[in-house]
Image (cartoon, rainbow, N blue to C red; front, side, top):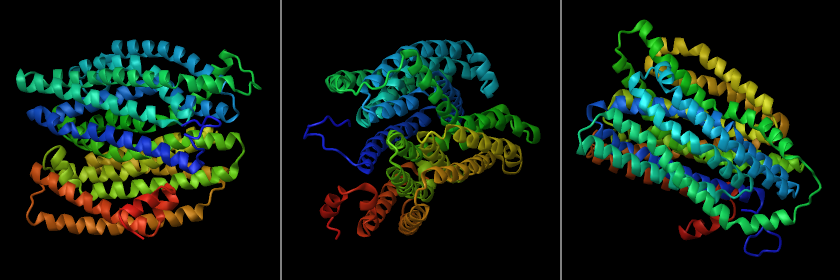
Length: 549
């Protein structure tokens, strides 16, 4: 939240407290949104009947292409808006950052209309190239409407992010997902259960739900813009006004900043598109699977695990979003000691959240897969592999944003390109020898190369304390291993009288084991005061409530 001078209600926060607060809002938003996006699959998958895997595969294929259109149509502007807003705000040039916001809003309205039309017209060609066939065309067309709204919505989110006010951003994501899931389940139930309709029609309505969600989200963002207008007016009136930038120059400057964000930010989507365009084609060269079987297999290794692993990966996104404006502010003001601490804290916070989340999901892979889909050994094994790959995806999303926040744009693009090249090189042999596991292994290898290069560059620029970061991360890993032992023993005990292949009993297993894991991890991090170092002084209150000295 922006601090107005002289207001007691909004105390000045340290950079670490701002990062933790912003991360908390975005983590809560992403977890709620991703959980809703994962939980809906339980009834939705069941209502699709015998076509469940094909329906989920169509849904995933459509969304992967749609995600790329969203990235292109916004041209990386939201992250660039956040970065530029933080840059000018740090110089007390609130008037310039506000001008940038209005100009970008106008530009993105035009881009949204253009790319929505392009996606609608090219839907048949995109469906054919994706391997989805005619069934995918209606899905592509329904998603084009969301492309119309998303660019303007993203500019508003980027403006709030740049002002270090993550609450409107977070709430808009939550209501977007609630509206989307409600419409998806309602239409899927009516089409499949009431009228015994076609699963393709149900998938089409489920993807149209993205447009419904964005409209609701836009309303929430507009409400907060209107509510906070007096504060923005106050800040603009008290701007330094020492820098003069023309509107055209402002947009050009922002678009230059945006290009790296679209290239690097599309990393996960591009890797998934590689899988989508190569998996079926490669498999046909050495197997006799039918198109329907290949679609099902694609769903099992790509679409199904995604619903679960993206809940965890969203945590890394939350940390990256909260940290970006703070890192840019530190660089702009030449506060290199603060920058070094921010980098180290970001990486430690990543380990603190991602390690227990990822390995906890690995321990619960079998009951989780049963709960969300059906009992399936292959699906469970692929979910575990997807969790390992997700750890590298999350790290890539975090540190690529950190490097661009430090104006290391060219290096970030170069390292993404190297990782993608590695992915392309190992893709065919991985699929040839590992089949459905191959794309996940190739993704993990590609992102690990990018992450190594990104981390090395960040260390070179920021001079952050690598030794301290590694020691703390190792400590977190050890605590995570202890948590895993307790969770695993609890799970095996529950298996004595609960069947992980029954949905209701799988739910109980997940609930109890997760509670044990959270309790063990929470107790240990509070007891040794690791949580204090990463989350700030507010943890003292939590320790007092649970009576841990």
